[in-house]
Amino acid sequence: MRGTLAGMLSPRNRELLGLVPAALLVTAGFTAIFIQAENNSPGGSTNLTLNHASGVSLTYGALFLGLCLAAHLVIRFALPHADPYLFPLGAVLASVGIVMVYRINPSLARQQAQWMVLGLILFAATIVWLQRTGVGVLERYRYTIASVGIAMAVMPRLPGIGEQVNGAYLNIHVGPISFQPAELAKIAIVIFLASYLRDNRQILVTAGRRVLGLTIPPMKQFGPMLVVWGAAMATLLLTRELGTSLMFYGAFLALLYVATGRFSFPLIGLILFAVGAWFVAGHVGHVHARVLAWEHPLDRTLYNQPGGSYQLAQSLFAQADGGLLGTGFDQSLLQYPVELANHHVVRRSILPVPESDLIYAVITNELGLVGAAGLLLVYLLFVARGLKTAMLAKDSFSKLLATGLSFVVAMQVFVIVGGVTRLIPLTGVTLPFVAYGGSSVVMNFVLLALLLVVSDRARRPYSRA
Image (cartoon, rainbow, N blue to C red; front, side, top):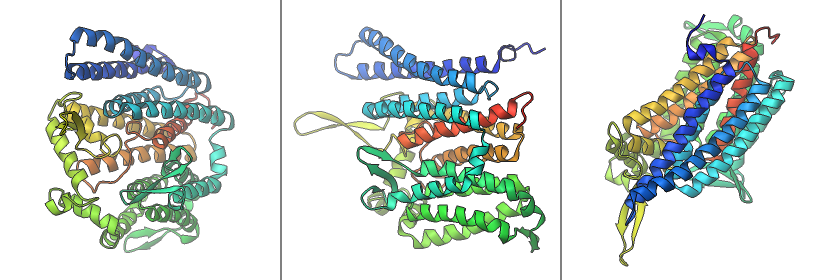
């Protein structure tokens, strides 16, 4: 008999209880922001600050909890056996994102909240749809899904709707709506790879040829997958979205290894990646500039160039300034006061796009190494629960789908955190659930819904899946 509180609660009640810390984070975060902002303003009063901050912060926390409760009810009735920790972990990450984006730019935070509402609507719709049809419907339409993903990924290069930002083509604009289609493409390609490897993994293992101690898979079965995956990678290189390309490549190698159990397959992939990275870094100007900025972030020539090392150098300064426990909200190097000729004081940012590309640097600066480590721990727990879902899944497609989705999240965090900390060259990938970005927030909630659907089928006591 399990005597712990978690053991006495049902999975859905554990999930419900896990949403409380997320709501408390929102309430505490907004309270701290309002108090610090009032204290920094001329004539600020602590008593007035506490009264104002408490009411508004509790309102924001209640609204956030209400949204999470609505999504929880969908899970409770549609997926009663789903993993009880995945959604609370996603809610904690989303709560950190809302608070930090509001700290940087309140108007962007309101937009982020609106995108979160849309993401939760699609989250619920995905659960209800797949609960009725089963995840097998994704497997049956794998080529259609892959084609849509590739078509969406190339749209930022189309004239009239595409937009170039810092050398990369990331967004499409249709009227007032802006969307980053690579977020949809990452899920589409994972679905295709999981489905194709499920059908051909046995042939890939048994029919390969041994060359210099490495197993070379047969092209008849391996070829179609390489064509679709290669088209996606070529499209991303065409749009110069190199961070997403790296994320896809890592997920591809992980799925290949999990499906076949052959270490030689990802080893060959790593060798090809090293050769390709060397060629691209030396012959593509945009990538070459990123590599130079990574190698010499404090070089004055590169520091002052447009698209040079300024962004990375400022990120390193901000993280170093945070120390162990951080500088606190509104006390960071994120913004500094500048007095103009008319004696007005304005606050200017030393970090370009702090709400998206460099939000991890802001978190490290204001919450310190402890806060940054806590955030990474939540991501590790999220990925671990996703991989546990893959282990429990009863069919090969569900196993590979959960593995691929989990690795996509892990690779996305690695790419952006590694870039901001100068472990790898900096790219423009968003931090899942945390960084500002409508398409990122929406598609990450869809990704979470897919993991929960797979988890429910895997944990059913007498599932026929």
